[in-house]
Length: 321
Image 1 (spheres, rainbow, N blue to C red):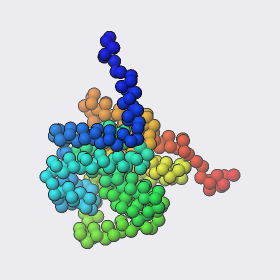
Image 2 (cartoon, rainbow, N blue to C red):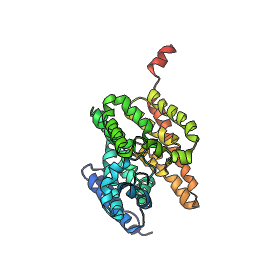
Image 3 (cartoon, helix red, strand yellow):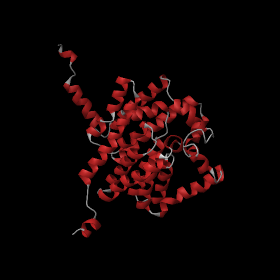
Image 4 (spheres, rainbow, N blue to C red):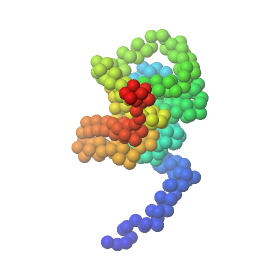
């Protein structure tokens, strides 16, 4: 075999050094992100954005399954033609992932290369909004800015099945002041959309359309699994990550692409690798049911956090002395 066919070790080493240099990382990330956006511009993606979210941005609040106030965050995109708006959303998603991952401790490069996040970009999904809520609420909690944390909670509420129990966790950490923005937003939504809009929305959400009665059986288990992390895991970020993983593992209806949010946290290499297996099997067999294996990732993360950061509550230890 010719030596020219093998990678040059010095070039690989130089590329790794460049990628590891914190000063060069933003530029490299921007370059990769620009290539992804160019690919999206050349490919016929954006189905979900065209048929659901661009319509929401233009004022059709019941054209998607999300709560009506999603319109407030998408409104600026509604002034552009759908294709330009879709590509702008992709740019926003890629830029936001850099900031969110840096806040939560994950690698933005891992997220950008993940099948779940690329699927979000391809479809034009808006899971970046609850993900941004995670990052903003966490940053505000660390900076002791509970009112700003409320904006993060409002963003989380755009996809309640992804952020419901995280909302409770941040309310516990930040106190009543974190409710200031959500309360004003709720009042404004009742004025704009009518006081009965939550009932109208619940009439056609995925939970009621697809989950049916399963919601009432799954939700208590989901809540208990999330509480396990709060009680038995040490460290706020670890508790936070555990609750997010428990939510992904227990939500009655959640798109497979939503699992990208867990990649925003610090993960072991095998927790990252396991997300590629379902997509590989789906590609080999043309069977989308393999995507159910994505459930392995949050379960592995929950088990690892309990193993590495598990604790016995003081009250439990005292009662059993």
